[in-house]
Image (cartoon, each protein chain N blue to C red):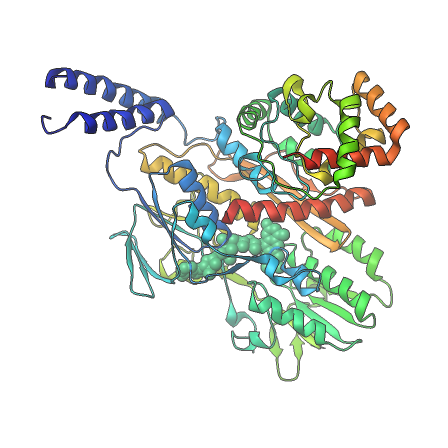
Length: 430
Length: 205
Ligand SMILES: Cc1cc2nc3c(=O)[nH]c(=O)nc-3n(C[C@H](O)[C@H](O)[C@H](O)COP(=O)(O)OP(=O)(O)OC[C@H]3O[C@@H](n4cnc5c(N)ncnc54)[C@H](O)[C@@H]3O)c2cc1C
């Protein structure tokens, strides 16, 4: 005690008092609070930022191989030529300003006992809590003839960036009168309305530039997200269901599941064989690879089971999984869901590191889709933790754009879709 | 200060700290209670911006909003009295207590204004119209949230247009005094007047 001089003492009591006044119990006096986040996409970046906003005494390290992240949202507008790819591009300077240490490297292993993350660059990072947000990986073996190399000819464009530009350029180079095939994936997958928004956007481009062309959606599913709104839009703009419809959808009952592709001859094989000038293969999906390496995945379905109150893995303590990689149904695998889960997770991690139990969560999602540059639709939902500890939709809330919404309201949805894009990317990366 | 006094002070402080831990470490881990104001408010940020200040181009900033006006608005969305694209669906996701908590949170945040394109001449004309028709309730050039007025100064332009459109078209109900003023503005100055007003608010920093 005698060694504590007056200045030190005042500093110490000052901190303790501030803590007491703000209501942050200082149980872990001096103990390190280290969080390592794997994956700097929507989920990981939001979580990093909000951890720092909620408790600036936490040391946050984010591991992400790419220096530039391309959002998948609004990437369909890049593909249809309506948007510059630069506008969906984000760096990590904003996160660094929050005091987050960003390391551009790949996590190659997580040791849940020693509590450390190992990177491809040879770093070993000790954590008190680890948040894993690696997004999706593809089930490459589900479609015969498809592989990462073939994806350079038949793009998936389901992870944005070079793949997005490739599909855009192929459609741009296609002759008038050509066929664009979109092979949609089985559930559950990233962005349920995404393939159908993509079809709408490409159709809009074709209608204006190559009106003799066609889009063929091959789908293993009997129905899809916002189906009524999409098909009504397609009828209105693209002659859907008529003899010369620009868009044709072949679902489960017509044998729409693509099981094989031939990239040389440009065929997609479902129950029948279809020739395409451009073939966009969106393969079925599973959690990102690191989730498998770190034993966070339920082998039966390929996704990560978590405690819905905190997003802590059901398989390993002190490891949390958020975003597309998780099993969080009824929340969809969407950017807004990943952003919302990241905040719930951040609050739970902060509580844990401060010796408290996870706070009561609240979650949200909204997904906008643009059918044309002037016609937007959306699906929204608010969620809470149900009695059985599972995420539940709030009864009576959310839902789709009403069928009878006026053109003016649908146009407003476009403006709000752009606002969502600006605000969520700002909320995530700055 | 001697060592003994120091010790006494330390013990008192530790007492406070432990007590506050006990308070805040309390229940949770169940689904029955209500989420904290911040937890609830975090769900809004995807569209309305971090802490409720929107970076545009259309979704409104809700930081600094009056407590009562927030509640009133959410209730009007829930009942459908106020038209909207998605807020009528979202508002139904929160109960009375939750809405009160969010109102408390957002009313305490500060409205961060960002520059918006505007026509300087129109803004000057709009300023006069504001003084004549709006300033009585939307005080300080539309900056004030006093008397449960919506903050207009620096609000996003498309949102202001949508809102004024809804008022003048009769889609959104107004209380009597407001109705008289807005109708008079509309009748005397028409679309150009509304345009000038919007430029004035957009010009505010
Ligand atoms: C065409 C399309 C349109 C979409 N539109 C919308 C929309 O309108 N609204 C919406 O809400 N959502 C939309 N989405 C969905 C949205 O993009 C995803 O749900 C969201 O990106 C999920 O976030 P995440 O953090 O889980 O994954 P991601 O954002 O993919 O981030 C994962 C990150 O982890 C990194 N990573 C992976 N493995 C490692 C490792 N081992 N070490 C370090 N880093 C690693 C990756 O490099 C990546 O940056 C769309 C998706 C597509 C494909």
